[in-house]
Image (cartoon, rainbow, N blue to C red; front, side, top):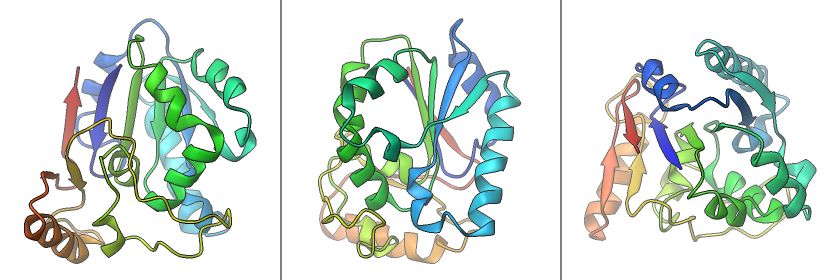
Length: 203
């Protein structure tokens, strides 16, 4: 598996994402980090823009709602095994983590690590890969998730650092990100801070 991490949206280097892809140009777009905002026009516009940006690099995009796979891990595994790119939006990291747990995504993605597939995403979708979700509570609410489940504090552990997006950026969460970084430094936690537009590629 290869990784493309962005602070916001597809970032300033979409060609790098395009170059990571193999022959399989099928993509799924996961927007469950936005589930609590589903009826919000701004969120709907964001999802439409995300899909437009992905189509702009030449992939065929299908929306994948993890809620449709709650309790259906094997079906989800088959679906993800058909694509070359898994792309996940920003939003609330705790909501996304719960959706990943209930659908089995958190286990399926680990089974795909040795496959020729790309996982890409921004903001919360990178945060959820961290060892722990502690610190993200400074920015994202841990309460009122749309699934009625208890908060999960363990990340997926696919990266060994915390992600601090929107650093020094023209973003509504930028000030809180500085507080988040202060939390990491106070607790001796490794982190990477990205400005909007910046990306990290891991091959």
